[in-house]
Length: 115
Image (cartoon, rainbow, N blue to C red):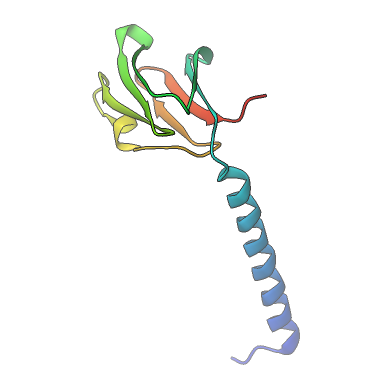
């Protein structure tokens, strides 16, 4: 099957638009973050500056805990009382818009720019 000139132009335009959208999205979400917000049941319970090292335990739903570490501008969960440990496996985050979620403990840590 041979593509005609109009079809090739259409494919090139679609690919260019997709690449542009990907690039814009990457630029928006790749800014270094400044603030980490910790929420339990959608209520912000703590806010941390990512430029300062923090080692704390977050007390979540039904007595669950998450050991939060902020070091060198990166944030991660070191230990968790939840059974699946997904929040630990999410690894280190440092960019605007990223988050770590622990569903059993109803905890979300999101990193963002200040208002």
